[in-house]
Length: 105
Image 1 (cartoon, helix red, strand yellow):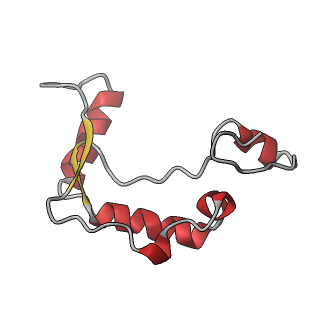
Image 2: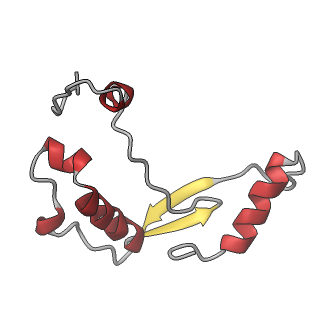
């Protein structure tokens, strides 16, 4: 897996966890910024709240930048959540939503 150094070991730890055979220590989901991390380029910064949550191409580009600038340690691995809070279900059911910094209601 791209961005994950010990992916095979991580998969095995998760398999053992679900079989109730986890040994040694609990699963650890830890990521940290790399020493030479680059700031998010201006062109990837969200232009507004809708862009931040609804522009899939730019969301993926921002997450790729995040992955390139962070180490995924322990059993953490790159995974991107595309939900935007409690309004997700309302949006999926057809409600009109308004994105704001303090709420989506």
